[in-house]
Image (cartoon, rainbow, N blue to C red; front, side):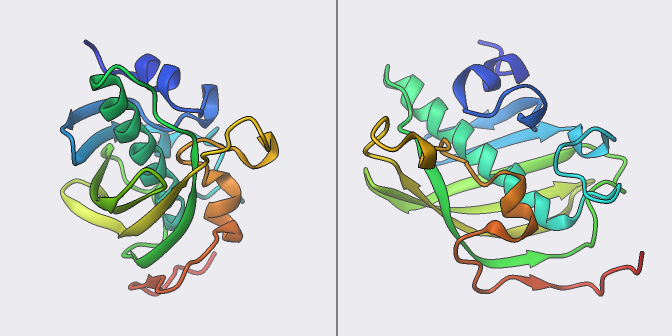
Length: 182
């Protein structure tokens, strides 16, 4: 089975331009690794003022978490429950921007805990074997899917608003490099 962009779009809520991932590189029941080149696109929906800030790496990781959930569910003949990004912790932004990297981004997630209501993942976003963004994220599954569609945003519903300050609990976010001046 080819786990390319088409497969990803069929299995996570993000479609068309909002689907940021190009392919699944590898996966198992606890982890997934994906590749993407969308950070270089001038049409990237997360760009602001012509730039793709490093905090957008959280959305790339969140979509990889959604892919992991879809892969695990598909392997057992089911579908992943909808959910949303509930919090991020211990986030390190090691660079100011993602769009300046010529190499593809590689997103890695590892599920470290969880049950039918939540999942805790460790994540990283790298380029050219350098970790650009890393941290932990909690996913809360929407067990009442269909009851309140306005809040059902898919397993990785961080969206562009999340990357620009709309995240739930962002305790422990740090920028380890002084941001560049515009």
